[in-house]
Image (tube, rainbow, N blue to C red; front, side, top):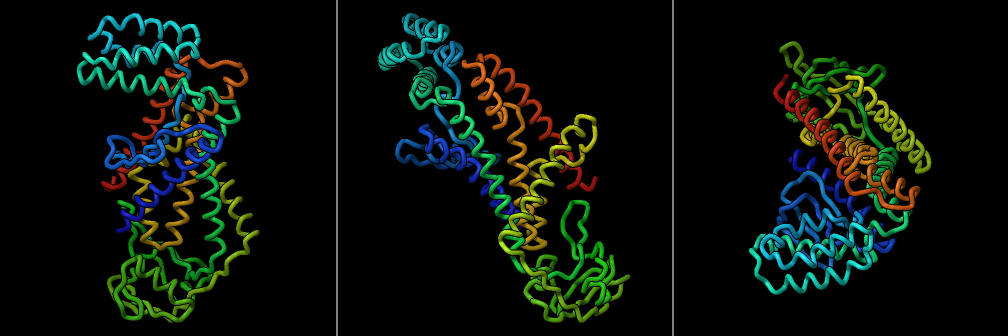
Length: 404
């Protein structure tokens, strides 16, 4: 169950990230075509008011399809109409004209030519594969030529739409930290161990000085097996402590092979902060995590900190273990993941959000679009770097799960 809750938490973070892009795009006059949780192929989809909402089969993220992310270029014509042209050479006039218009930058003149090409394609004579390519090409280029195309927008609108995704994750993290800090909590002052696969156990790793746990006589390496005589799992143990609200408890522990009763143990109430104080503390936590993440990448370049990288597998595992330790810790870890997702996406690398923001600023300063070949080369570099991080994290997580 804990793994399912962890996956649901990650899905929520992805959903709010994409919702940020989606709603800001609509607010500034762009009309998203798709809103997906997960990547294709689609498991389920529905269309409402011209927008396709769907659930993808690959649960590694999500996306919002905004029309015309790039200015149309000759390479788009080659990509979509190569097979149709091979099967129907008489289309060469229209296709060649469209390619020439894009090469010269006459995107407004390209619209009637695209419409005429669509009429020619509608006469048939193409294989199913070529028909799919042609249909997709017409749709994509019409979107790119439309007034709501992303590349046509003013710089501030483009930045607002792209920044909205990470910003939503950032705000969510700050709000979640603040809500947790406002809650009363009951603590006893113990930290539970984790095994080599990072599963939470009932064995005490450490006892904090001056806490109820120390006063009751708990020791590190004690394994708690029962509360008030009832056997408990690690999750049940923490739930019982929280639910006690300070009522004395008697614990049964295994110490050096013998069962020992320890108690009474009365959890100490930690009063929640006021809303202003909680927000202030939340911002402080956010800043500390941000500076730590900012210092991580220079260390990684120097060959340090490789073991700190995690893949989605490790993130899910950590979230699951946090849930086993209690809802409050799970929500705190979820806030950290949301914050990390925001910071990672703001790296100035395509295809990450930070890369799109960087190129939007460059284009705004230049007063014209960056060439498509530059985008493609930058995206290739960015994808390689992101994949490197993914595989480093995956190797770390597999090593931890195998006990290595």
